[in-house]
Each structure stands twice: as C-alpha cells, then as structure tokens.
Length: 257
Length: 314
Image: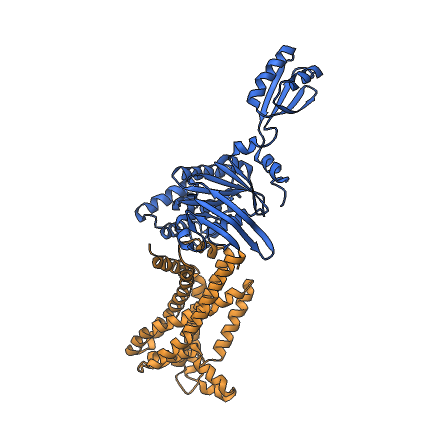
C-alpha cells in the first residue's frame, strides 16, 4: 500500500465517524429541514421576496458549517483518547496525517450539506441542479477550510467544554456577520460599512450567494464566485493544517498535546 | 547489526530528565524485557523507539534506521501495543484489526483468517460485535496485543502487555509473545511485573531514573547477587552448635542462621552445597525432614542494583 493509499484509508476511517454518530447527524439535519420548511415557507408569505429560496441556500451552508466544525470535536476526542498517538505509529508522514484529517472534515461538510441540497432540489430548476453539482468541489474546499479552523480551536482547547465555547463563538460570529439569513442591504441599515464588507466576503456568505444565484436562481456560474470562494477557503484550510501539524509536533516533544 | 541501538539517548520533559544518556541495545530475535518501576523511563524509551517522541539529544536506531531522520521507514518495521489501549471508540474489534492490518500491507487474502484466528486465541471472538468503547479493560488490552500479533512486525514493542488482564489471559498473551519471537520478530516488553519478566525474558534491562542500571540474562543477573541461592533445611531435632560449625567449614556458604529446628543458609551454588550438607548432617546423626531451595527473585536483583524495591516509587 502506498503512503497516499494509507492517507486515504485514514481519512476514510475518520470520516466513517461521521456516520457512526448518525443519530446526532439525523437530529441536526432534521432541525435544518424544519428551518427550511417551516421558517422558509411561513416567511415566504410574509416578506416581499421569496424567502424560501433565500433561506434554503443559507441553511445548506449552515449544515456544511456544522458538519465541518465536527472535525474539531473528532480531533479533540482523538487527541484525548490516544487515537492520534496511534496514528503517529503508522507508516504515514506527519503531513499525510494532517491532510487526512482536513480531507475527512471536508467530506463531512459536503455529505451533510449534500443531503440538505438533495431535499431542497424539489424547488430547484434543472439547470440549477447542474450548477449545484459544479459548485460541490468548491463547497468541499470551503468545508476543509472550516474544518481547518475547527482543528485550530481543538488544538488550543485543554478541555472539551472550551472547544464547544470556541466552536459556538465561531458560529455566532460567522453567521451573524454574514448574508446567510438576511441580505447585505439589511446589514447596511444597522451596522457600519466595514462590517458589511466583512459580511459580504465571509466565506459562508459567498457560498450561500453562489447557491442562491446559480443553483436556486438558475443563473450562470461566475468564475469570480469560484475564485472568491477559493481565495477565502484555502487560507483557512492552511491555518487548520498548520494547527494540526503543531499539535503533532507538540506531542513529539512533550509527549502530550 | 542490532535490532535496536541507542547512543547517549536523552529525553527531557521541561526540567525533568526521563532518559539520561542511555546506551541500550537489543539483539535481533530476542525478547528484551525492560524492568523498572513507574517513572523509570520505560515508556519514554518505547515511545521514542516508535517515533512518537523526539529525543532531546542522542540517537536511536531501529533495524539500523534512525528514528528521527527516517521515522516513516521505522514505522514500517515496528509495531507497538500501548500501555493504555488506543482504538477507534465506535469501531468493532475486527474492524480495528482490519484497519491496522491494511495499514501494514497484510495480505488481504489471509487477513480475515489471521484476524479471526488471533481474536479466538486471545479470547476476543465472543466480543467481536461490541464496540471498542464497550470492551472491558482486559479485553481492550488484549485487542492492543492482537494488533501487533496480526501485524507480525520485525520489531514488536509491548508496554505492560498484561496489566488489567486476568491470570489466564496473561499466560495466553505471554505464550503468543514468545510465539512471535519464534517466528522471527525481535521483541521488547516493558513491565514492572517480576513474573512477566521471568516468563518472557531472554535478557533483562533494568532501568532506574532514566538510566540503564544493568543488562543481562536472568540467571546471570541472579548469580551476580551475593548469596545466589537460599537453602532452608528442616531438622527433626533442634540444630546443634556443632552441626552449625561443621556446615560452616564446608565452604560455599555466605550466611547461615539456625533457629530451632530450622536452618537458613545463603549459598553461592545450592547444587554444590546441598549434597555436602546432607552428607555432613548424616555423619553427625542429624535427621533432615525438609529441604527447600529458592533463588532470588528479580525484585531482589532490582533491590540489589538500585537499592530500591520495584514496588517503591522512584
């Protein structure tokens, strides 16, 4: 077995944890679906634009975010349960282990949001479905980036509760200052200009916007959307990879994370 | 070439020295038992050899491969059973073993049979449908051993392989470790259990406070202690002073303490001294009822070389 095959095997095994917590995932997905159907459909009749089509892409991105941040929880547990130390005795380079975790996080994000997308496809035009499929690789990169952030928080959390505090703080800040649930014009009414810019370039906003325009709106895909998504996601994935690499290095020197 | 060789190997955790300038070798195909109390540096040494820990200074080689410069290659030839079992909590034992076997290129055709056979031998087969997190401490430890047995590495490392395992399970694990050695693997076992060391060791290394105190085969280590054997003789009548004097003159005796009908003697070689003692007693008309010969335990050896018992903290 080549080192690359081993790396893929580790990523696959770690990713399988995503399905081994299937009841947790089922509950989270059902909450998202409930948001889609209840909130989206009710508000559709109350606001001046089609809130269902606006909200659903946001929820899909939220699902991707939740699943990708689960990587941090898995890393935290793996560190405390000694699985990371076990991985360190396998014939794979440190960089391979780092890549495996980040890939696994990306896969988790894409599977979770994929489920939501499939359900949402009932209201998506055929061209939109094709556009959504083309967007998937970029959503995968976004998920690796968020998984990277989660890995960073796992690396600096001494106890599990602290990791959840970081993860929730990340969620609140990234979701609040974004255009997931409300348009940037709404943010501009209440918050200063720089915040609006941050919200627009928030990777979650970019992903939700891309889904709204090209998948749910049926519009043509723009290369600038892809470039922006990559531009904000790749550095996050890099931070995560570096953080995880630092964890492994710390274990090698101190014997513990 | 040594299977394992360290030169001036040191490891510090902050200001604490876990290993100090350790020079240590293991021959190919032997079972080397590292004996020492908790905190003696056993686990640190093993973690360094399996590349989890980076040494502070010095070098360590496994099968001639430097553990720092070429860690991935070292990991291809070695396998470790950790002191605390480490597995995927939500996986079943067989899938943990399958993952491990595939990472080490165990023939996929033979893999399943090998896993099944190993699980049966280590009495894990009944627990095959349990998740790792539901296994008992002893079962998890046996699974840890099973990983290495399935892998059959050139260098197999076992860190306290039978802690938390019942007596019957201990014997099974020991037999499987010896079998692995017979199949050509070099074995390192770290333990603080004297009986485990006695059962397994081709040679013993005693570690104390991160330094190598002594390394040799068990008989040689025991012989190195003054008063190699202990002979306890029971007489039908109280031991006479004259008999004590005559026995002292036989030679080969280091200390002797008569008490009532009993006589306890530390002798250099029991097999030489006992026939002469029985003959002398017969000539004096002293009737012997019992003779008990014991040899010093490894705990005595440890005490002799370090001044502390294995059970004492460092």
